[in-house]
Amino acid sequence: MIRRVSLILALSTVLLAVCGDIEKTAAQKVPTRSLKDLFKDDFLIGTAMNARQIEEKDSAGNGLIIRQFNAVTPENVMKAEIIHPGWDKYNFDLADKLVAFAERNNIKVNAHNLIWHSQLPPFVRNMKNTDSVRQYFENHITTLASRYDGKVYSWDVVNEALDEDGSLRKSIFLDKLGDDYVVEAFRLAQKAAPHTKLYYNDYNIEQPKKRAGAIALIKRIQAAGVRIDGIGIQGHWRADKVPMKDIEESIQAFSALGIDVMFTELDLGVLPNPWDHQTADVSQTAAGNEKMNPYANGLPDSVAQMQAKAYKDLFTLFLEYKKNVTRISFWGVNDGQSWLNNWPIPGRTNYPLLFDRDFKPKPAFYSVIATAKEK
Image (cartoon, rainbow, N blue to C red; front, top):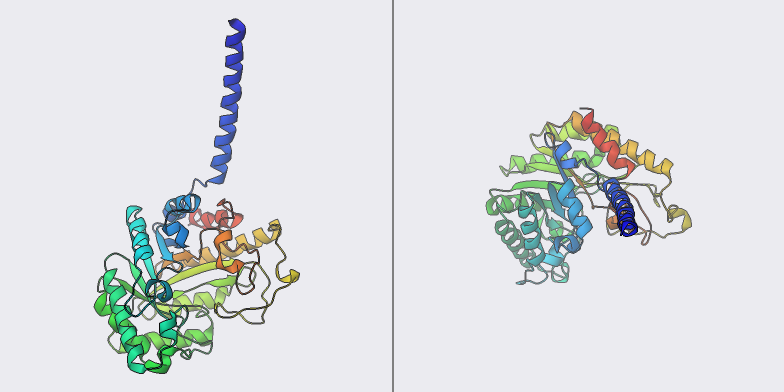
């Protein structure tokens, strides 16, 4: 009996030690500090949600979203090709699930997006008649904006309407509806969604020429007596080439128009750029080779630390302008879910976000939360 008791006690000791190690390992994987809590007095902290997360099939991803973020943007499910696939056909299922998930978890939804030249359903891309395009335009905006008014916090009313030189991008909407289609989109959204913030969203609008075009566009909307509440600078930058001066000047310039400024699709990629210019145009592709995918087997610590410093510098700047910057949203929950793994070269291994492929915090996460502690 004594031997049996001793054996039981010994086994219990081992089990307690093993459980302690497991708990310690789990604690290391799950950060105790929350981005949304640390920056709660400064700005919203958001992320993009993919379809699996919206359907709550990604338990690790959903858990991280609930712990770390207080704003979400649907990556794809509110884009026209998914939510409005036919003339009289709407598919609200995933959008409704997103809204329900956010409501249960006290998270604000930035709906994305109403009008965009890309990811249109085939029936729109093939339209030749101006009246048909106008009817689609009016029906699409009115139906979606009114359905989710009061349920979502904000809408990206128009997405990526500008070319790099600041002029309006050639699109079916510009071609069929004319130069005022952006103003009309905001006018329709204002009428259909009086309780929803209305935003313009684009990439590279921190660059001087495109920024000037965005300023002119906002002034045009305002001059028409139409409401625009804010502008989203996407923030798809290379970690080693973040345009800090242009970003600061853009915050100042857009804020001077009396609107909110947001960084809406933030990710700092670490892979080589196949071009000699910077873009986030999803229609562009490039050929790949081994030199274009240097970190297929893991991210070197030196690169991770360089990225961490870039994120720290950015958040230090955001905090300096926290009276003007209302939301920072990352474009994805972890590195493995980033669109940059497949754009512009499919199959690359990129590391642009704060959490790695196992949902563990990276050096970039700790550099960001350090800025909150230094306030």
